Image (tube, rainbow, N blue to C red; front, top):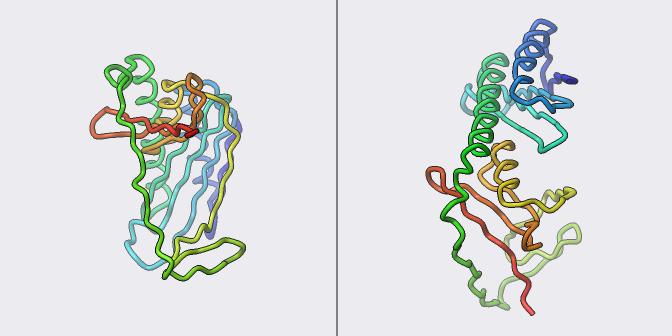
Length: 199
């Protein structure tokens, strides 16, 4: 497994780099298919809480889904330890969910959510910013990402959501061939929203 430790707006000492490498190697027991792990420390110079001075971002790239954890602290070592604990928790949750299939039973019937029609107001000014037409004060799209996607089952999407550490996951449903979003509800419940093309 390749381990890459970098710093943005800060320097990473050799001592810290060595300690981080040793600690990350212990996680390899939980994930045997990890190809590369990237640990990035970012110094936050913005005014605010001193607990947010350093951000540690751990990204594990494997043959399967990408696993990611992030933590904030006033010290690089503390931020790393917090992020590592989050990463281990995500791996354990995903492993437990695969064993128990928790969240997949009893959720066959999901409410269909249809957006309310929005009445168009011609009095609202429209302008073009960087090639994008903006109505009123926004919102303005400032970032766009595109990811390659292969169809996944609901169970696979839940696994990937747990490993990435987000509260939602966008995927293409393998059974229905529809764009879908799985999201976390209170407790251990999950929900799914699917887009159905209208004729």
